[in-house]
Picture 1 (spheres, one colour):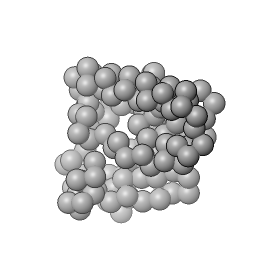
Picture 2 (cartoon, helix red, strand yellow):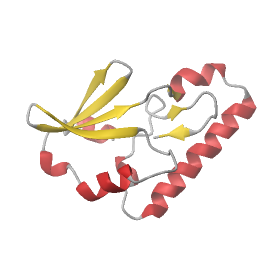
Picture 3 (cartoon, rainbow, N blue to C red):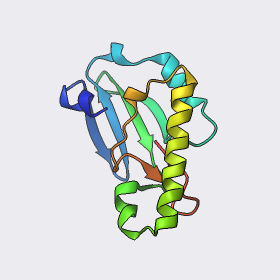
Picture 4 (cartoon, rainbow, N blue to C red):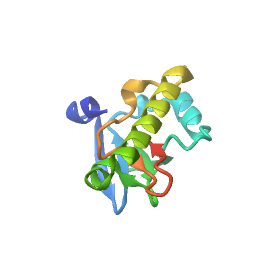
Length: 124
């Protein structure tokens, strides 16, 4: 996803604890991938809503009580870190096996990988 930000195809917008991506070109929005994303029940993705922002498609992500991995890393013990890594790899494998979602469009920066501090489940 960073390449999309770097190329100016996306703009990131902070919305309090939540965040949004605004598409420069609305034709970049893929309804099939969005529907698949909405139907994922395993909790592997941050809750997302499609909205409009000044005539452009906005994907609004609600992280709620999740914490960015970048904030949690300094406080994690080795066992917790391994659980988070295992959950992260399981989510990535599920995305790759899905067939409808493109891994190249999933942001894997440490500040965009979110972890439930109670269960250590990962959301992308």
